[in-house]
Length: 297
Image 1 (tube, rainbow, N blue to C red):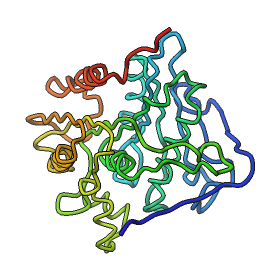
Image 2: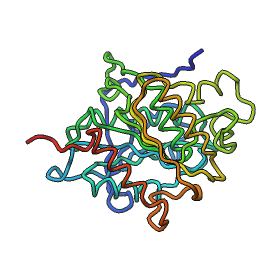
Image 3: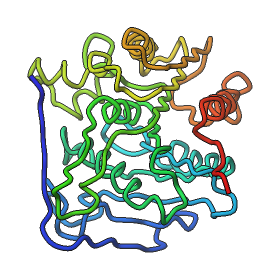
Image 4: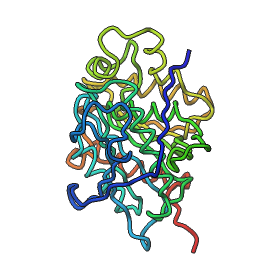
């Protein structure tokens, strides 16, 4: 059984821009004001946004990444798993869009996935504005954000070509996945807090299976890069391994780096002599498979 959701907006699409984000990020509302599906109010926590860190045309490689910070589906670690990551991508010529998605206590599944799905569509629909190739847009997530990213990577759709909303017409499939110490499973190896915040204390067994993303991998799942640590005490490394094995079985190109030791939630790990190599490994992977190849003039 597949759990599904959908929505359609009527009327013109409106985007709200501003410079209210940290470090000059362009803040974009994902839906027109007052049209956010499933919203329980009109406060900041009820309105999902993208914080766009775009690369100038002369430095752009054409690649972009939708970044999903972690936080156990109860808050968002938008500093070390958002802004700092966006800055790293920008140095490589990659535009980054940090997703401020809705979460507990006010919101559970399917709302975070709705926001991520809309975020991917929005970036793709506006690719030309940001000098981005619509076929080189990935999603990255840390911890529970890794679960959200892997959910998007296994539960995407082609879009609704008949929608009056231009954003809804495009595909929500990421071109690649980057998963940092991710929650993947809602089963035996899950992170309890993320599971409770996303689907409650006593979820339906079919929903648990649907959101155990190692069980949802197909040959259409995007190429994936994963890193984790063996002794992560918050999110078990088995999550990363399960997704890796599922990708292998489905024939999905996948690269996994498991470090000997390291705490959970390190972000870029710039002060950790052992773990700080992982961003370089990611850059090498992205270059090696062509995601960061500069556009031909």
